[in-house]
Amino acid sequence: LPISLLYHFLQDLQSDLNSSLRDVVLCLCAPEIYFSEALDAALKKGADEFTQQALTRVIVCQADVNMKEIKDAYHQRYGVQLSQKIEETAQGNYKDLLLTLLARD
Image (cartoon, rainbow, N blue to C red):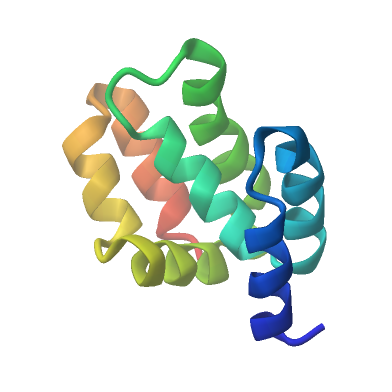
């Protein structure tokens, strides 16, 4: 599936009713974009606890799978390195763990 066609399809799924379907399609067709969006949501101030937990889930589960692609997608979408955003947001040993896992790619 060409990325431009996927992008157009996903724009059509932006409504609240279709957000779950959008997430499924995005996760299947472009997981690096899906995970970069989940990480961005988790790193925002005011994110709820479940959303914040996505930071750990994504980085731990994807560290050996496709973290380089996720980091590239994050940088492309948000204009900042994922490691820099984690440096600014996380604290202490938790921050060190996340940055160590990011560096493993």
